[in-house]
Image 1 (cartoon, rainbow, N blue to C red):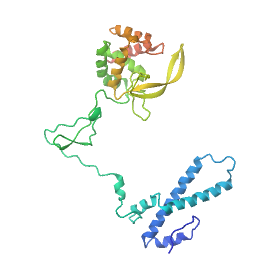
Image 2 (image 1 turned 180 degrees about the vertical axis):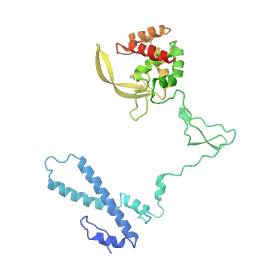
Image 3 (image 1 turned 60 degrees about the vertical axis):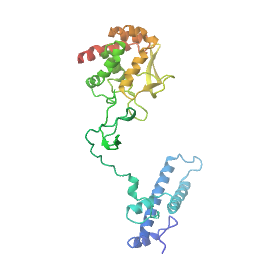
Length: 317
């Protein structure tokens, strides 16, 4: 008895398929194949709709014959068994597909079961994260004695939230790193926070990586030809001859905020910023000299930072 339609217009097999559906796996396999053919028809139809079509020979008649061709093509593709959707449906519904008996069951494609962490023995030392990456709390690592232990995620130095809800949280989270960096150049750490606040909108507009995630660039330092680290490219507003100009520019990306502060300190040790460093003991003269040295093109750059420093940073003490 034939239960397989070879032409998509062969509707006479539908009743026969319905009668056989309660008696054998053959009907289940054929129903799964028909479903696979319908799915392939939908895929082909969507592909046709996404195409602009032929501007010369496109017509209702040509589209009609094209649809007939696509339906027949879908039927032949499903009959060949190269797609695999029908076999998956048969296995899911408890039937036997055309796959080998020693093939992988459907559950095998869902990944192995996650092992439960064994309790760590007393005196075991938690494993250290590799290359500064925090260890996952669900990952088991082998200790020196071969025993497995589960660890809590370790926060890398200088890490913090990718965005900050309020200026207070911005100051609280970054003040320790600002103090470390400021000690190397002799400036008030709160001036560094005021500058970072202006550059990033209090941490709410930190440049983002293309695939998602923060660049941790607190001072919007650009990536020149000598920069070997990660980069992000965004549109920026620069002042040329007193006029604001939109441009595309590349900026540096860091793994955490500590790297951002350290790179800022390294940048200031260039000869062009020697005057700013010489004024580090006076926060106001320092930021004014930094602007004069060409750190930013905004003519009001220093006055904006000083306004933040006086009104919000100092008030948060």
